[in-house]
Length: 306
Image (cartoon, rainbow, N blue to C red):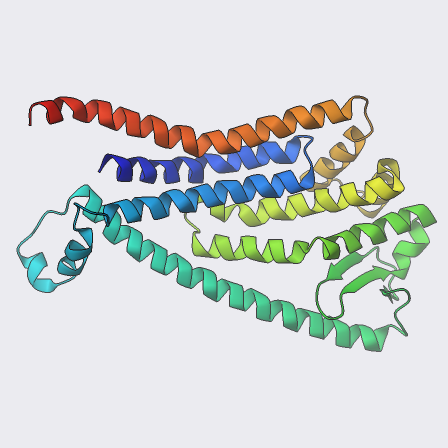
């Protein structure tokens, strides 16, 4: 019972405190893969703790599997039997896992079909509006400054002619590499996975805020990739021209680009990376260990007098 309760509490702590750590990774000077790794580590530890709680509840000595079947019978409910904590965790865990898995599967299929329809529609429309694709880039005859990419077969990178007129050649090349970085990094799949996780567990802050975090993280990752090739100043100038009104998301990206050229940057990246990884690993482990120790200490007097 102590272990099951500790694991359930760990799920709650990671699920509610995880977003704060993810927001810290967006502000910290850490590599892009580390941001995604931290997110996966927190999600994985939360899911593993939940699965462990259910497995413990159904483990030897609890007979929760039998109680689960019996509890679903009407004649059992008539006798007003009181379920133990392990039985409650087992029953609610099975129902939650089943519902979350179903919601995740449905959201994943819907996202996949939507992506296919979006790609096919854009490809068909671009084939009509644009004369031809040059170097894998589709140029829209619009004065608006647009740049986006859509994964599929073939991958689509779309830029507007208005963007080409307003940006310098190096800035335009940086924007193009930014969009190609999204495709190389399979960022569209990461965003889709985050949306499916959010649909599966919308009541858990870590899952619910995953799409917002991943959307910001992929932009920072693409900016960094373009900055390594064309220079942070060039990417920053292009971003500033494309978005004259700075939203919080744009301000975050410009801040990272500005900081990427400072001295001793590598030392800051190592420090921030170590702190982020340590916090992501320590959050679930320390919570579970502390609760198990506290529960065992609290239960010791009762066991001695048993």
